[in-house]
Length: 258
Ligand SMILES: C[S@@+](CC[C@H](N)C(=O)[O-])C[C@H]1O[C@@H](n2cnc3c(N)ncnc32)[C@H](O)[C@@H]1O
Image 1 (tube, rainbow, N blue to C red):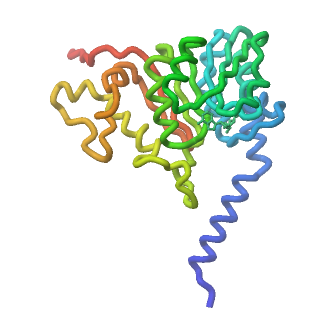
Image 2 (image 1 turned 90 degrees about the vertical axis):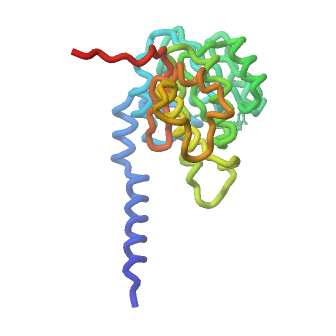
Image 3 (image 1 turned 60 degrees about the horizontal axis):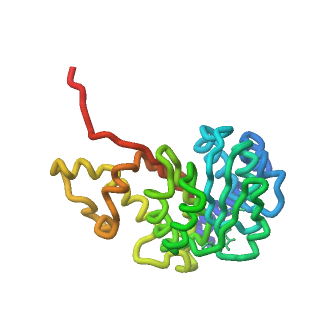
């Protein structure tokens, strides 16, 4: 007797594999994006193809504007090269990593700097901000652990990112892997945390007694400088596997009644 649900599950899986490995799809994602075309020419990297459209869409404003970029996670230096070429002359790229081997990519003459330390270490991150910041863009491609992603954001968003800067966290899929809790190493996942920032983004309305913050789930607001975050958190954009948090100055809410 054939189990129809099994056939359906297998064909879904087969389709998924085709989708993930289709050469046509690779061409579209890589060749139709500036970041993808550059990435293709750099050895030693490994990225989801969907990311390139997101990079082009989110980062294009900063091209040729000499931005300062901080990336957590250097590995073999591939993304340091990507950003250098993508943003053009005058940009400064700072990579941080736990692994001292990454110092081989430190190249001040090319405006590429590598600092060794832990992304969850607030004192280390403050040192990086003092030395090189504030940054126009911060990218977290480090340990992919919830605890580190949350700690780094708290250490860097308010003091390490320029106004109108972007904070991008990648590989959020690690919060969903079914076979390990290695990345979900704290009570709430980093996706839960970033979702909860919507409450802080709208915190000003609670001062008008509309609502209590974080009525559901863990109350991150208790442990955070909510006014620091709520004052500057302009927008939060979730993509598959990525969240982008945009910083900006928000005035008090106003309306115009005509
Ligand atoms: C995915 S790789 C980075 C890839 C790189 N951004 C690229 O696209 O070419 C992750 C890196 O994060 C580093 N890492 C892991 N845990 C870390 C931590 N707690 N603090 C800083 N770096 C860490 C690893 O050593 C590794 O080099």
